[in-house]
Every structure is written in C-alpha cells, then in structure tokens.
Length: 357
Ligand SMILES: Cc1ncc(COP(=O)(O)O)c(C=O)c1O
Image (cartoon, rainbow, N blue to C red; front, side):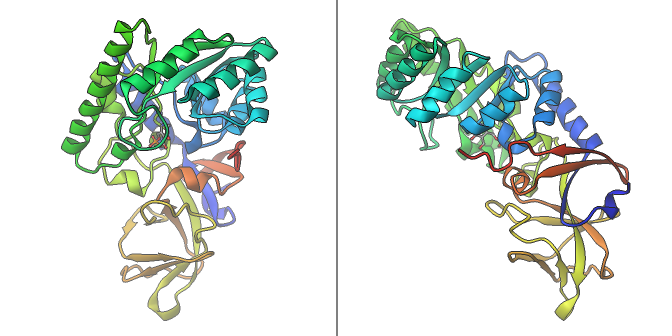
C-alpha cells in the first residue's frame, strides 16, 4: 500500500531515517563509557524498544509504572523508572515486577525508600534504586550533597533495596539552542555530579551508575566521562523543537494530513491538537514531494491553518506535518505506520499509549 493512501491523520515514520538515527546514536556512543538506556516516552512502542535493545541499548528508561509493565511484559529485562513511585498499591506492583526482571526506580526521600523496602521484602524481591539529584531542573531530587547522602544511606541500609547510583537529569538544558551554551551548562552539571560522587565516596557510598541525558545533550555527555547511562528518547523521531539545535538526527516521524480547504486563501489541513502534541514549538509542514513549506501556523482542535505560505496545493493533496513534540504526539495515536520511499512497510502498535499512571 502507498503511504499517501492511508486515511488521515495517520502517524507515519520513515523507516530508513529512523534506522539511520539509531545508527548515528550508536556512533556517538562508540568509544564512550556511557551506554544508551533510551526513554520509552518518545515512542511507547514495545516493538521499537526491542529494536533499540538489539542495537545495543542496555535497557529502557520510562517515566511511569504502567509503561514499565508494558515493557516488561513485552520481554524487556532491564527497566528504569526515572521517577518516584509512592502510591502503596503501585509499590506492591514495583516489588512484584522486580522479581521478574532488573527493575530500578528513583528515590529522593528516606520515607519512600522505607515503604519501597517493605514492599520488596514482602515480595521477596530486590528493587534497584537510583537516588535522584537535582542539578538545576527544579523537579524531583535531593537538592544538596548532604540531603543526597542521607537518602543514599537509607537506601543502602534497607533490606530489599540495592543502591546503584545517581539519577541526574538536566531537562532544562536539552533544548538550549546555542551549542556553546549547552556545552557550558552540561559541563557545569557534570561537575556537580562528579563532586557529589567524590563526596559520597568519602562517606562510604560507592556509585556504580550515573544516569540521565537527553537527545540534546547525549553527544556532550558521551564525551564527558561522568555519565554511564544516557536516557535520550527523541533522537529516534526528532521534532520541530529539537530541529532548532542542528543535531545530526533527522525527522523520521510525521503526521500525514490532507488539505481539506483553501478558505480565505489559507491552507487548511485535517489535523489539530487532537493529532499533534502542542506542548512545545509549533509544527512544520513538508509537501508530499519533500519541500519545506514556510508560513504561519494556527492549530485548532481538528484543524491546522497555514497562512502566507505561498504554497498552492489542491484540495485533497497530502502533506507531512513534523510535530512540535514527538513524544506527546505519539501518545495521541494507536499505531505508527512505517514507510520506505512511498510504500507502507509495517504497522507498529503504540502499546503504551495513554499509559500515564
Ligand atoms: C528523565 C528523563 N530522561 C531523559 C529524557 C530525554 O528525553 P529526550 O531525549 O526526548 O529529550 C527525559 C525527557 O523528558 C526525561 O524526563
């Protein structure tokens, strides 16, 4: 079947660009002590997780317990939930899952570590822990080395838990457009983590793993020598927000859409915020024959309105829309169609779609 015969809007991915993005990431990490632990949130598609594992990933990262369950029940044996799990019912599930695979969760509170330990002890399993350190994102994580040490000591001393190391994610740096500024911020963050590691060593806590990093910082962190695991996710698909950084990865993910009206001289496509993640930069349009279309875009619920583009498509013409944010866009679709040239080559289920608990 031809990709342009798919009903629209459809989420499609260029198989060859996607494969090339995977190859580029392997190249970036070759010779680095850091290994890839890609973030599942970007594709939520267990088949692609297995592709990443076959391409050298040491395991998968995810944000939610339900995503972890999807990965584990698809056969992935090493999963990091890069988040705090505190709900007592969820703690029981974490402890049970840890009996089936290597499962790591993030902790930043000694009380939470105690509850996790009790659940693990009851299940007879061992939950691996990364204690999270806030390196400037102002999200979760211990804020000072002293606070970090007290949580790490709690984890290290509790039955059913194993202290693995540091989670330190700098999401506030990922989309910094200036390469020089991104590098400066990354090196400052690495210093904070290296200083913490040294401080922990002096206090009897040895750090085996330092995990974090994103598509925007992976090349820097790969050469920095501090991180042992990189959690990049968007590199597989890319999006218009990441495009501004000039990274080597190319757009492989598009929403295929149809021109449904030329009302008022605008070009109106049949996809709006119900089919395009709208939490970052706006989307961009590429014609069916691959030309980038300029112009001002407005998104409604079901429509994309393009003004002042100079593009004169016929009604019914197809177009590719590059999402502003690949991760939130994928979560709006049940499946991704892979294509090569103009032919559909596969259909992948977004197995963890909506798994945000
Ligand atoms: C904990 C964590 N690790 C890694 C990432 C990296 O994602 P990306 O490469 O898609 O920017 C994110 C993004 O939100 C994240 O929250």
